[in-house]
Length: 139
Image (cartoon, rainbow, N blue to C red):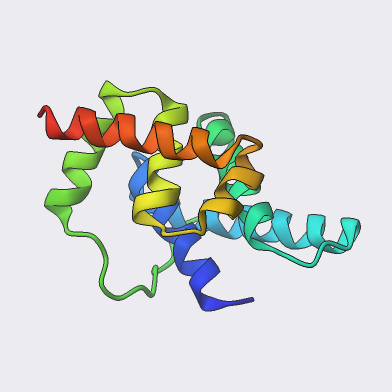
């Protein structure tokens, strides 16, 4: 699996989850599900499946328990201040908008893969991202 996909997934969970201790385990669960889906459906591209599965884990994660904390092993993480600002921002916008924003602006997943994984158009991903950026600018 490409390191950029793993990094994108870890960044997604680092920014969206309230409990940093669950980042690695949620990412591991999403990546495992994406790999299984890719193999089962014999799909050539993994990125849209990672977006889809990680987003499912994010929406379901308050109801699920995942394993213990493991080191993230990432360099150049977003600062604590930025992550704190993003947590506050997530309270002011819809989850759908915030998820699109994080995949697009933080995780830097390709727009077409985000749209395919979220099952929306690229224009919808861009619109949702812009709405979050507007809300952030108003802060």
